Image: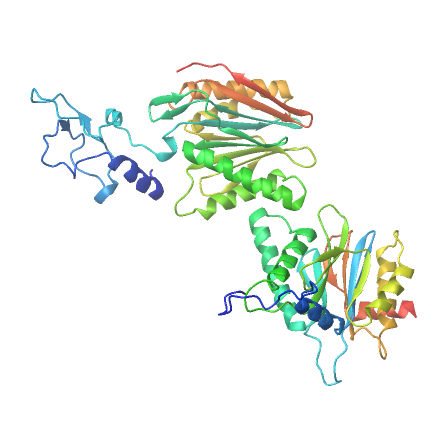
Length: 278
Length: 237
């Protein structure tokens, strides 16, 4: 089901390109797909499909003519760019991984888009969702964390970071950042810390794994199947890699390889994953 | 704060480079009732005397030593109403901090933000500096006991032991002689009471002094009850 924010943002993105109201006099060479709007007013989100022009002259492409007319699915703003992020706890280590795809709906635009960001040697955050918000949140978090470390003269613990992130998201409760983060780190004692939250900051901490992204269902399934507690760092890497790759292969919006970071007290091991490039 | 009709500061430099309003504020502090604090290896104690103008005063509900967070507290010397404002602001800022980070605001951060407020009032339009010096006592998550003094100018200092208010010079000399780096909390409380008694006119008992203690064992700031104070006083006798 679609939430209020998604609908209003959806309206802004999609309907700016829909010229139903603006060019009533132009001969439309489009066929409306559904018979009647199911919802009142502007919230109807089914898009128009093109048909062959009925006259020898093609209707001149307007500025708002977009390739997105070629699909007829309901689009969610959290699925606009596509992402898969996963984090798991091992024995005195945590791993966090993401895919590399950046798309604009079905069109892939980049195969090296970073979604996992290092905050410090023992704290990583992965952000899945609208790419602009992923990047902005990374900048905001870095900003807040740097100020904290300068003021308090100590490093930020993962618990404090998670609460800070939750606060930042909730500040925008009625116009949120469209990103669902995953926090992975080692606390002061060196034990693994995992947390996730929704786009408005509801925190969930777990002991085993956390996932986020357009294929989160697939990721949950793979994690539930492959996860074992107290894995060593090499086994954790294998488990994360397999879970991620199998999940994104069944999702059109994520994939194009991935990156995995394994965090231990000694340091961070980062590896690129080669997967199906589609 | 600075939302009065005055857009110019009332605290301005004299020719010799002094901010006279701050000097005068320090005078107000020096006329206030003595307050002192001692940081031991396993805790911090702060104390002040609570002598009232007449025997008719009901002093049970008015506190000079106030908790700010679970693990830190203030005491002051100077103008009481100014102090209450600072306590309110510090408590609010500590709660806002907890809301943001879900962690108790560390003593050092508390001191910095309170000092920052006090400094604002020396540079904003239409306001005067606070007529109080604060002693801030607390223990952070790292278990290190801390004692700070904050002045009307907004300057702050860390102390092992100090006194402010009336008679502070004698009190500080007394503390210097008695203080030891390996002092424990119990000794510190005794020393604090003895130091207070030095400048006390009349008989000191559990009802005319206030003592606040934060101990490393539980990290909680609490006020001693009059009975507990009386016990310490009896031991000291």
